[in-house]
Length: 102
Image (cartoon, rainbow, N blue to C red; front, side, top):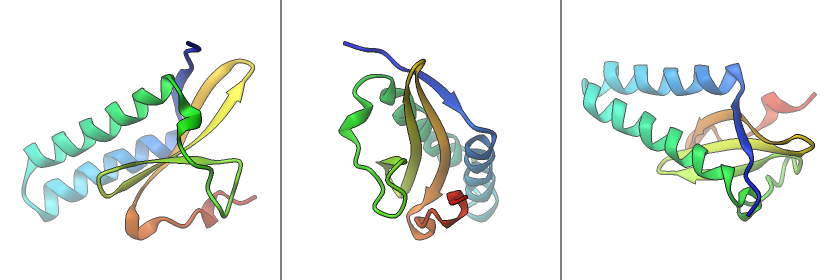
């Protein structure tokens, strides 16, 4: 089975940090924040195998997404080299990808 390298874009890293910070501050639950961030990270890591199992985004078909809890993990697949670029992590209420158009 083909294995893809997982690469996190700075925007996705910033998103994950912001999610964790928000949960820590608003819900006053550092442990819950850590668990959610870890769950998102592990789900993204699972894309190393079978990334095509995830649907393409209807708005921007070059991107696919994986749902983890209330979060959408957006990514692109490249075949040469075999890599998954994690581009955004959004709460389900922020699902639109308009910021990725360009």
